Image 1 (cartoon, helix red, strand yellow):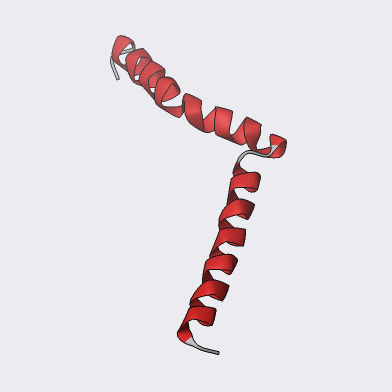
Image 2 (tube, rainbow, N blue to C red; image 1 turned 90 degrees about the horizontal axis):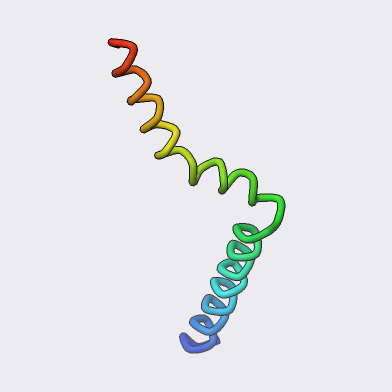
Length: 56
């Protein structure tokens, strides 16, 4: 095997890993987790505002 073959194999493996991660990230099972993570900044802002109103 020469270096071109090894590079091709590594590229193919990395491509398969990348596609797997993309499918994992966009799968329906992950939607709830990502929606929850997307709300974190807003929820933290609301908590901070509530704490300021309560004098904490």
